[in-house]
Length: 407
Length: 114
Image (cartoon, rainbow over all chains, first blue to last red; front, side, top):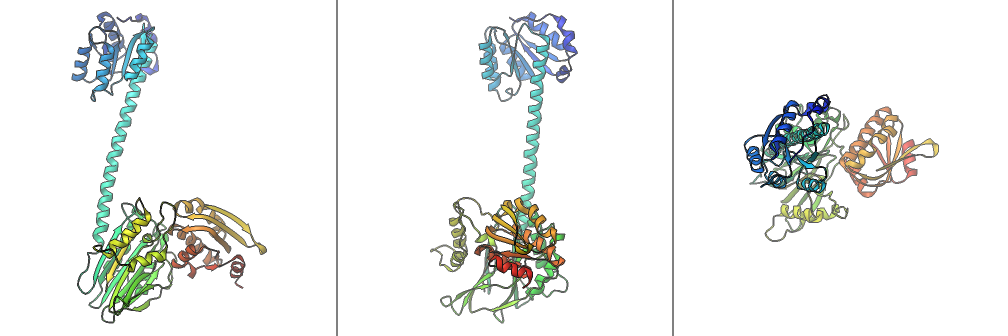
């Protein structure tokens, strides 16, 4: 049912640079008219394509199912299964639907062409074929297919790389969590909550006995969050865990902060700094000595009994760590009563904004520290729930680190 | 964020900041703030009445410029910060390396060392 343009046009077509794009590609010509399909096949073969012919719809589908083709030239008018039906079956088959299809139709048959394009055909070729048009449309379809395949390949590579990156970040996040101390029980009990705002946070904290009497307690917060902040946070925390600052008595908070300040100057740390609260609880004297490097004060709730306890903010002057060399930090001391709860946290626990862009009130936050939790809820869970309730939906904007120690 | 520059009586330079000094806000003024403060090696008043919030990234910008000015014998005086911003400046210890004034007259006095 097709007409083929005279082969005299072949020479002109073979000189067009665009033809090179399709050379070697496997095409399937579907036409019930054996003469036309043979002529078209020969023309395309001479152009450098590998061509298969099917003279009816079912044979075409069988060939498509069994072999790989890069493009189908499909006649619309065929007996039994016409071009529409073949096209529908191609586009309904997940294995075949990406193969571009060029419909072959009469010039006066534009309505049929429009219908084919709606079903999913890529282009159409009016009869009789103009060699330049034939070549241009085949090349355009093949190029489009190649681009789509490249795009899919790149997308798959991107997904793969993201998966890989996510797995590595997970591993790093697990490492950070593994460095955080297990809860302590006995004469001192601890509980904590750590919710990084991104996969890796810039907060870290810890506590460990320096000797039989002195317990070191600290929480630090690197400016910003994410991988860079986490790396600095871990470095500083490992120094504290290993007590590896030269000429530093780790029972003296001011000495520790001065040592950290010299060791972690921001011009050597990719312009990052951190804030820290570092304290040492002496269980014999029942006293906390502490120093602060630009960090929110820890809060001590203490007294002879819980009922008579009061809330004390453990403040002291002190610049953020790593910004200026030679900064002097000073330790302060605070007596600890028989009843004592110590809270350490990062600013992310109270610098919260809700959906109305309203900030949480710091005083209200302090009140939640001593507010009795509802029955059956732990104190720390209640504090976190209060923050979440204020924030509304969504994650915390900053890392959320909270440490509660009963002394 | 917005950054404008004024010259007060006596030729004292005043950089006025307004907006949220969070990551996005700080990045939007960082280059200009550096150029108008630390890079000039001259004492400057930084008026902050229009700043409603400051995050650690904002503190970093302020500190980086204080760090450039102090060795040159120059300084930054922060002027009229809102309560919450002033609390964060003091919490971060910036008041140990720069001064905070309640109004422009006090800021000028502090800048002149009167």
